[in-house]
Image (cartoon, rainbow, N blue to C red; front, side):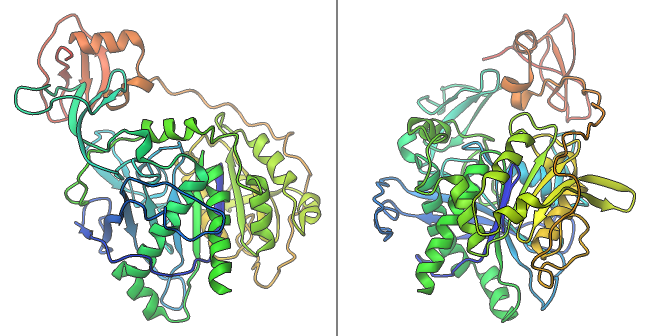
Length: 484
């Protein structure tokens, strides 16, 4: 299955082994899970020139850097049937956006509390019946890295610098200027576009699927159980999803024919190096040979389920554009999909979560009152859509088996443009110290740096006329010191 949310995909993946087993860690209970289900984090290490030597006809890749891809795996809390569960790979967009955004803000087992230092259980976690694998890619995204460098992060400007002395007598850290360990930030130390990102992920997943003991052992024990693998992507993942999944499908066809987390780098939510590398090749307007829309058609004709999920408050990925894309996909049953009407998405008996057009394996859903991260804004509706897609039920009700009704199509109006929702009240702006560049005004930044801002749990709560030193444990108000 592939999901575009803006886009999501799913597919069945081969399990060839390309390299030796890599290290991973049992994450202590209490870190994003308070149940008896253990999660695992670790790295898949690919040495330089692994992709250079990858045997794919017509493809030549230069990869002079190591690839250390971080993953965090959450086994399903409950098995759906046959003692096994399908596997879903989640990736955020960017390019260079960390998949920890999805884990901690959208569909993971926990959500971060307002104190920025603890978590609460997420009742709509997607690992209820599905094994969830969160992958930080391309390399240099989030906890993934090429080589380790000491560096600094300026929270006010968002600038990252690895050409500084952080040793004794070097730069000093304060609440707006952080010192840590980072990827190289070298644009030549990461992939330079969507297509090459897919190739790197393909090789990494061959290692993980074949050598990660906890998953491989469970898959072997399940025997003829659920061996499906799905990719769910978001935002720029609207490009990752079609391109990566199409590559994986082609390869399958060729085959058939932190300390507790074990991370050596400090976390960054978005990789400027990855973004710059993608920009250097003009990745956004570029396409693979079929084009991204062509990839969706190829996947559907190959029997791969595709679910497109859009929030109707998302200005970054507007749902009208997503709807247009869905209607432009050419595949064997395209006319039947276009002829299907919109049906209500029954999140539960008392709530309609959106509207969906579906025919067979292809669906487009408009989710009501959801912004750019659909599972964050409407977690229950996203949870229901995810599980219905995973387990072959219709998106609208979850009561029609697509295995038994392969010609299923929704009925209703041909457009949803007449549906108008009340605009919700906008929340008060929040100046958050760990994301100052995108959440704080210039005036607030100046007050933080001058020591005039009062902060609680990394949030500016008021401005005062006095300066002081930073103190407190998150439950108390504190003043931020002078900037570096």
